[in-house]
Image 1 (spheres, rainbow, N blue to C red):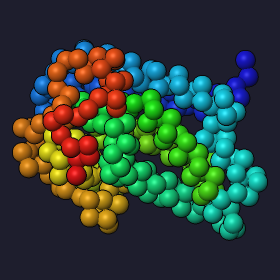
Image 2 (tube, helix red, strand yellow; image 1 turned 120 degrees about the vertical axis):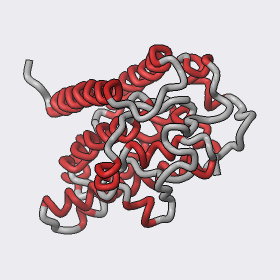
Image 3 (cartoon, helix red, strand yellow; image 1 turned 60 degrees about the vertical axis):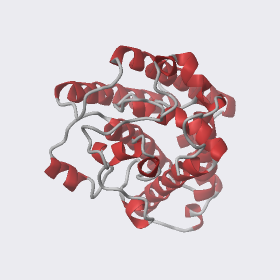
Image 4 (cartoon, rainbow, N blue to C red; image 1 turned 45 degrees about the vertical axis):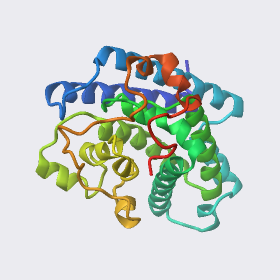
Length: 278
């Protein structure tokens, strides 16, 4: 059967996702950064159930709108929609600018989801995980996924990001989300070097601290520069990586690791913490 462009995109992304997930899972098992506080099987069953459901949901949305993010980028390019399409730019420059603009947009969106109470209600399911590993990087509430897709689609059209840049960004974002959530120990010298150009696990782990002032910093997913530029960068957690507590105070019992509990988090009152971790 002949592969369409949309099917090819799906095959590429799924293949890379599975390969990287196995890679990070292995590294976490061989060189863990910190001990887990909850049984991994129950956490992963809940987390991966959400991931599976979100994958199906995204495919249904693509079918309903008749285009993937890359396909929408191609339409915008053909129609001359968006900022970058108003200029005659060499393709490499357009791709670089597109990647930078999308990454800045993701940083900004992440910050806004922490600042606005109703958006934080959706996003806090991601932060309610009492441990952090590669599965956490894929654990987002379905309502947040749909809203994020709508925002991304609007950005693609308004910015005029080239289709190739969108494909690269989607693949890189998926990979870095697993990488910077991975519970794997990097040599300190390597962490210091890598975090000059990419968000490392030690850098992002601070963002999942139970302490509100740490949770409300280090918003970057791909590039670490925006946090440094906009003053939202914290180098290390107060309690150290080995001893730091992960998650949110309210959601620490086993019921919040089950699929029903996970999906109900946005609709529950956060009794032990303020609505936003600021």
